[in-house]
Image 1 (cartoon, helix red, strand yellow):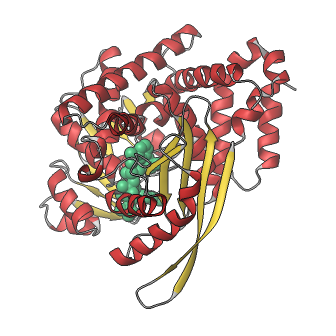
Image 2: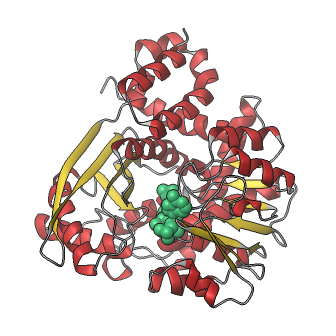
Length: 448
Ligand code: NDP
């Protein structure tokens, strides 16, 4: 059996009931097959793949907190320090009821390659909890965040592990987490990114993932003879990534016509009004039904159904920006039938493997999240630099650096795919380019 197949089998056997983690590892290792096979004996001797798929450290802890009625609750807390070969662990925290160790491991594994692609010195990590900030008072969220950090603080630090936000962890949560870290450690350092501007945050971090996604798409379209201006886009989600992706779509002359949430989605033929969306979702933390109430031609569709989801609205470009495994083969078939030319992942692993294969075999440009959504963590890297230097760059400075990083990522991915005769296969290019840097660092550092 080949080394890649052996390791894949081993991952499934040793990490039972973690389907997202298996999926992420399989996708990466399949891409790496050609690279590994060229040097199989040496990689096998050094157990390089076993070390690559095994987190350096996993921390699991109890998070007790008290609600407004005096009732005590207990949630699970996680931090997975996946790979520190090229820099301090870096990756967000996700607070959502469906968070499991397997989900955090999948995200940490992906993060390792994504961070490598940014060109910045950041290792891969991810964390979170099955706590749901939705429907909780600010005091309850603060109580939870303080309890979470009361354990996490001993495992992180500006040069060790630098968490950030992810789903369910926005500016409010990062603020409470940072406050508690500072209080316990009595150190004022850039231990978290995504901080508020008044205490060490970076301009453009909020917008970075969505904006970066569009810088990547713009370059990918340009290099394939297309122009973003005048295009119609379907977008899923209505959180941080989706909102700023839509804002940048408008700025670049394209029109987003859908957005979504857990319970349903919206089609607005006039184009999604981003200011109204921000008011509804970020300020009032309400449902998209309130968005529809303010827009004359917008329609709310309850639920998500394969083949009939927001992907069924005719478009040129599809941007899944909500969650993992949200775009299925049935959706890919409808998108292709409707003439969609490009799909770029704003979320992490939103497209199922069979849907990805369908796009690739039907000539649709497909940008994998670990490349196209790397703008968020790249700008977190820029926030770390500003914190270390004790300076603050202007919005324009950060945005220009973000754009240049995203353009570089596209070309790195594109060139790597070409180098192996896989022109246009950006999944392959991203996995191989991300891997090469991490593998070289791991080999140089010996068996650790
Ligand atoms: P947010 O929490 O801000 O928004 C998530 C959005 O997705 C919300 O609109 C939410 O709906 C929706 N959603 C969540 N679960 C589901 C589901 N099962 N079905 C349909 N919709 C769902 O998160 P972000 O925008 O920050 O993150 C979105 C994705 O992007 C995630 O995969 C994340 O890992 C990835 N990502 C985020 C980065 C960042 O900088 N924020 C960086 C790189 C990747 P509702 O409003 O109902 O909760």
